[in-house]
Amino acid sequence: MKSRYVELPLHYGNAPSWLFSRMVALSRAIYTAIEKEYSRDEFLRRISNPFWFQCFACALGFDFHSSGTTTVTCGALKEALSMEENGISFFGGKGKSSRNVKEELYLLAEKNNFSESKINNLIYISKITAKVDSSLIQDGYQLYHHSLIVTESGNWAVIQQGMNPGTKYARRYHWFWEDAANFTIEPHTAICCDRISNCLNLTARESEDSRKSIVDLVKESPYRLARKLSDPKQTTLFECDFVMQQRHEIDVRLYRNLLNLNEFNPRNFEEIVAYPGVGPKTIRALAMLSKLIYGTEPSWRDPVKYSFTVGGKDGFPYPVDKKIYEEAIEFISDAVSNSNMDRGEKLRVMKKLNIFYSKL
Image (cartoon, rainbow, N blue to C red; front, side, top):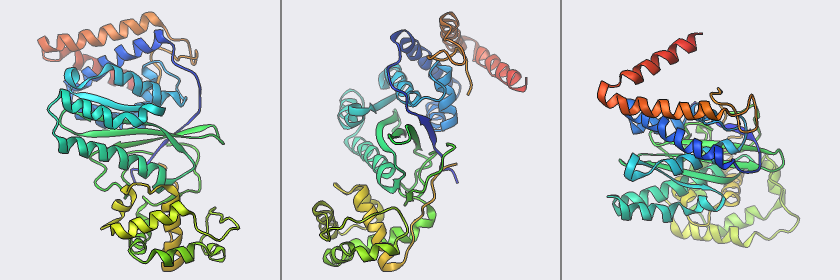
């Protein structure tokens, strides 16, 4: 199974400007080297790997285990790369920025040759990936960071992160377009950590019967669903931490969602997830009802599966060496520019050095 994730302790504060500006320059140089030696898609594939992304962030000089690894690294890449100059762009970001993807994509269409259908498809990808990680994987982490990465050809990756204020940890989710053949069936390239929790996981392959039952339920009379959902005695049949309140009436918003879904008459499970207004509460209620009526048990399996170059922002394992940092940026930039003249000889030398040091 490919699904993995990264879990990181929450750290607050901002990256110092002197470090962030260097992170922008170094990340641009590293991207350019990978793009010239391999391809844009190869860079896209690598950042969708949580281990490579973590090493990349450490190479830029950021905290090796901080939640800021995600937000600051994506922020540096967003500033470093543009569709016009590099053929790749980052959209979204942390907090309010995560909700700007749609507007940023429209700006992309104005400046570049992106068709309306391609933009609409990318907007849908941004929305459905966020919904899957917040509604289909209910692991106690609330999303607060969402980055959509798009290449000139329209290929994409998604990196998003949620926080659990109770445990003071963050969890990072990785998507890559080649691995997401189906958005609702184990679509992640990666979701890795030492903690495994008991969570509702409707993306698991073993939840297939539940997904089918939910589609059947939505097509039934919502009045029947309301009667079942409002009976607290029935909740004992569902082994989870879902606790009904003492009042018997159904939540108005939830009931409205059931009515709207019934009128919508979805063709498949993904259309239910993508429907406006459907969130974690509606999905969880439908999963409960599928167990109640059809006996289909959803999965409760958590979908889980560094290196330093210039030091870390907080001085661990040692302070960032500004001189070495500048030399690294200059060396990689020179290697990329000179490779155009000597057919990549410097890049091949760098690759051999990497093999040599890995053996040591």
